[in-house]
Image 1 (cartoon, helix red, strand yellow):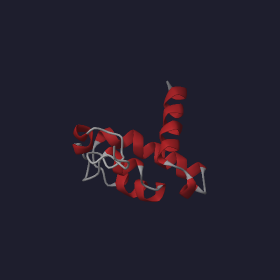
Image 2 (tube, helix red, strand yellow; image 1 turned 90 degrees about the vertical axis):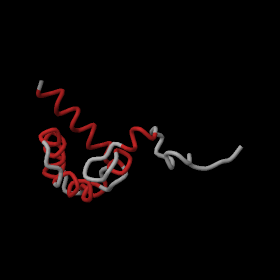
Image 3 (cartoon, rainbow, N blue to C red; image 1 turned 30 degrees about the vertical axis):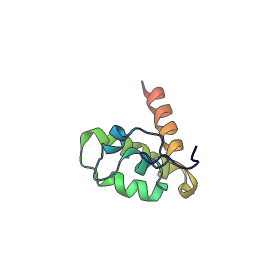
Image 4 (tube, rainbow, N blue to C red; image 1 turned 90 degrees about the horizontal axis):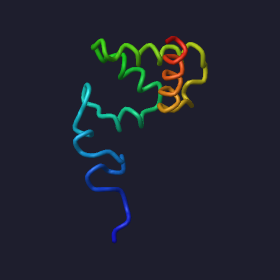
Length: 88
């Protein structure tokens, strides 16, 4: 038995089919591992209507949280989900 990250996903815990799906050259593992400032810049460059909810959520986080450098991508997803739940 060998210990270490999986050779197919490099520790992302996602199958290779999912990791092959990319937006502007980034897969989901790349995006979720980014710091918020970097993620914001990457998301701003995505020019598709499907990305608008993500861009809106990131703007909301940065407006209300002055210290957003310490917020993880999973926190952004949770805030976005909560905002969507309350607006429905």
